[in-house]
Amino acid sequence: MNLDKTFWSSRYEQGETGWDIGYASPALIAYMENKPRTAKVLIPGAGNSYEAEKLWEMGFKNITVLDLSEIPLANLKTRIPDFPEKQLVCDDFFNHKAAYDIILEQTFFCALSPDLRTKYVQKMAELLAPGGELAGLLFDAPMNAEHPPFGGNKAEYLSLFGEKLQVLEMEACPNSIAPRMGKEVFFRAIVK
Ligand SMILES: C[S@@+](CC[C@H](N)C(=O)[O-])C[C@H]1O[C@@H](n2cnc3c(N)ncnc32)[C@H](O)[C@@H]1O
Image 1 (cartoon, protein in one colour):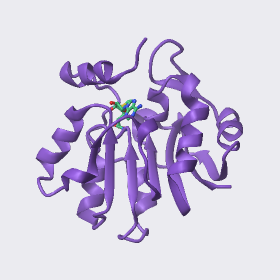
Image 2 (cartoon, rainbow, N blue to C red; image 1 turned 90 degrees about the vertical axis):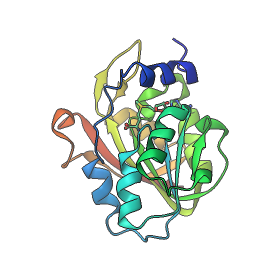
Image 3 (cartoon, helix red, strand yellow; image 1 turned 45 degrees about the vertical axis):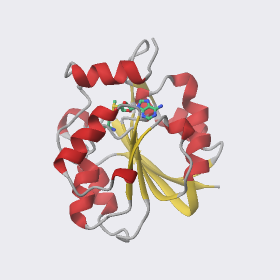
Image 4 (spheres, rainbow, N blue to C red; image 1 turned 135 degrees about the vertical axis):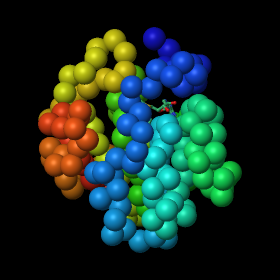
């Protein structure tokens, strides 16, 4: 299965977006609540990014929303016409170059082919500014073997992320949305 731009754009075109919860993830918003509004934030594989919309309303203006498909980026621009074009990046995460204070993960890791996981961690380490933090949600369940979402478990993630990052927290998420309750961990990691 080629998980490329055509694959993801056709999912949006056909409305096959089972991952899309339709509102900002409570766990991510709670995490961001007390963060400085000046923080430079990246949301990779952002999809429709209700988190970006909510964070924008909360006063975070330095948010970069990145996705392979232009469809969800256009959707966000429709919802927030003032959102700066240059902060809507249609590109492959692995080609992106910049440095961020905060990077938010939600159903992006699980959308990538598992053979890209080491590269994902390495790229996250490259994209974090000094003192920056990667935070978010990972499925703590087997999920699918042949197609996304690909699953995993805490032990596997600790070993994988530990290659390049120091994991500060990785625990069962207390404020998951109902369908994901008990099936995901919330984590925070910094560069070693
Ligand atoms: C499962 S969806 C999750 C979207 C969003 N994070 C959410 O929670 O609704 C995965 C998203 O990652 C994007 N994506 C997949 N591979 C990517 C890559 N290599 N670089 C950037 N975006 C990618 C897809 O286009 C899709 O929008």
